[in-house]
Amino acid sequence: MRQWRTIYLQRKCDLNQIVMKKISYIICICLLPQCLWAQDFVFSQFYESPLLRNPALAGIMQGNLRIVSAYRSQWSSVTVPYETQALSAEVRLPLNLTGDYLTTSLQLTKDVAGDSKLGRTQLLPAITFHKALSDAQGESANYLNFSVMGGLVQSSFDPTKMTFDDQFVGGSFNPGNITTAVFSRTSMTYGDLSAGLSFSSNNAGTIKYYAGIAGYHLVRSKVSFYKNDVAILKPRYVLNAGMNMQTGENDRFYVYGDLNMQGGNRQLMLGILYKFNIGQYENDDEEIGSKSVSFGASYRWGDALIPVGKIYFSKFFAGVSYDVNVSKLRSASQFRGGLEVSAGYITNLNILKVPNQICPGF
Image (cartoon, rainbow, N blue to C red):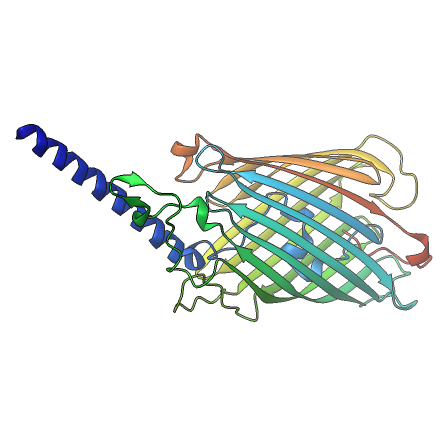
């Protein structure tokens, strides 16, 4: 009798644990729009993704064509890695001889998180107008830049990768009995709209700086998978600033910063880079045709310290960084955050270049 009572209590305890675990899964999924969309993802090498920082920073570059890709994997030491990929392209077009420009851009991103493969794919074209505030053929160039970016976002998750309490029938696991009635859908597509404004200055290449402000998710789309629930994608506002200056005949010093604000959350990103040229320029453009190495660090306030390295070789560049986690999760993560790599191509197409104009680029 005592043996049967012990078996009964053990099974009851196991069942309670299973039920509580599955309920927690359901609660987590029901709150996905509120918690996982509380803040947008960011790259540690955030300065390589201008459209994700502020669409008005597109086209502020050396050359008139830039293509950049980035890949990020994080939290592999804690759970299933979160993976983020991005690809962007920018083409700057001259409008007139006074120095006005138009930049057409395209931003593509894809991120996947967790066992349920919760992911988003974004396709966001953008257009940026650069208004020259000074004579672009003089010693310096000042620009006011305005941009609009909008497109489609597709989001989904895989419920077959998750388990629920009604999959345990008669003490055995039944993978075919999956509760999906909780969800009105497992995928969605919605529109997104962003806009930005920035000011940039190029003092004959000696000192360059910019400052900007942008708003993302301005259409406030509904993003819930849960039936009878209305979750609105909260807007994100960001302040940007950056500067670089020549510190020697063959070196420059770069400083970057972003402050993101979304849904009551704040995130401050700071970065510095020191660049040293190891070869001669092939033309008059600072970045194009140069051979250089850069090293520095970024800091995501209260979250991660990020050493960064970058190399330029002719018109190609590549960067690598690693998040050293310093948040409250550092005990579980053992300070391991995530690896990020970036690569790109930048050039100056002669058919898009106006002679004798100072490049507005950073």
